[in-house]
Length: 406
Ligand SMILES: *Cc1c(COP(=O)(O)O)cnc(C)c1O
Image (cartoon, rainbow, N blue to C red; front, top):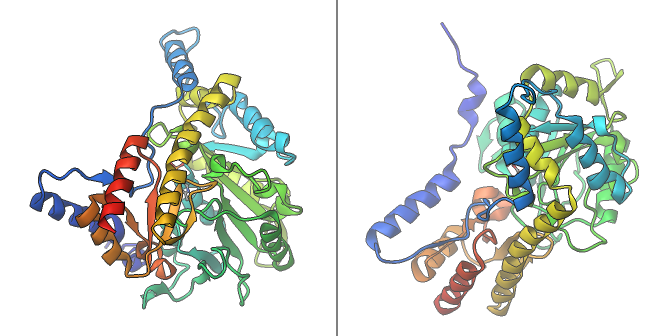
C-alpha cells in the first residue's frame, strides 16, 4: 500500500488567500456595480522593460535557426548571465562574489523552498513572524516543525517582529541551526541596517549556523546606508546564502528568472562534525533536479544589466515607489502607525484592531483589497499589508476612498 508523506497533513490550508477570495466574491455578488481596487497580492502589474523584450525577441529568433539554436544550457545558468550578476549586483558594491557562485533558477520561491533539502532533518529552524509562508511550509513538508498548535508549530523557533523592535527580531534565546531572514521584508516592508545584520552574521559564525537571506526586494532600496546584500557584511561568505529574483525588480513574475548565491566558503557539518562545503551539495542538488532556465528568458534577464536595461528597471521600481510613498503618506496622515513604503513596496499598517475586521472595513467601505497581517503569523495580528503594485491612478483612487471610509 502506497503511504503518503504524513507531514503534509500538518500543513495549514492556504487559509489566507482563499479567505480573501471568498470575502471578495461575496462582496462583489452583493455589490455588482462597485469597482474594487486590489492592493493585496504581491504581484507586479507593469510590462517588462523594453530592453528585456528586445533581447527576448532576438533570442527567440535564434531558436528558429539551426545555426543559432540552443538545446539544454548549463544547469547553473549561462556564463553570460552569471558573470553580469556577479559584477553588477555584488562586485560593484564591494561584495566578493564569483561568477560560479551564482545559480540561475526559475524563482526565489522554489529556491528558498528547496534549499532546506540539503540540510539535516534535525536542524533547528528559526523563522520570522510574520513570515513569507514558503519558509515555514517547506520545513513542515520536510518534517522539521512538529505539529501545529495554538497558531504555531511546536518545533519551530519564531523570531517575533513587532513595532517595538522595528520588525528586526532579537537573536534567538535557544540555539538554532538554520535562520531565515528577509530584507526588505515581505510582509512588513522593514529594512535592516548593516549593524543589525552584522549581529546575525556573528551569531551564525559563533553557532555554526546557516542564514538563508531572501533579498527579493533589494531593488527597492534607495537609501545608500542600507545593505543591498548580506555579503556587504563581514564574515557573511562563511554563513549565508542569498536569494534574489527578477520578479519584483524587473517585472519577471510571469517570465520566471531568479538566482541563488552560494559562496564556496559557506559551511555545514556532517553528523561527526566534519566540514562540508554547502556549495558542493547545492551544486549537486541543482544539477540533478533542475535543467536551467530557458535561453530567451536568460537573455531577457541579461538585458537588465545593459545601460538601457538598468535605466528602465530603475524607472519601473521608481513607479511603484511613488505609489508606496503616496500610500504611506495618506496612511500616516490618517493617524496610523506604519512600517515600509520606503525602500520597500509594502506598507505594514498597525490597524489597532483585528486584521480581518480592518480588511472588511477597507473592502466594504472603500472597495480596497489589502492583505490581513494575521495571515502571515501571530505577530501579524492587528496589522494589514498594503501593496504598491498597481497603477498610480488606482492607488490615488484607492487612497481617496480610504480617506472617506475612515
Ligand atoms: C515575491 C517573493 C519572492 C520571489 O519569488 P519568485 O519565485 O522569484 O517569483 C521571494 N521571496 C519573497 C519574500 C517574495 O515576496
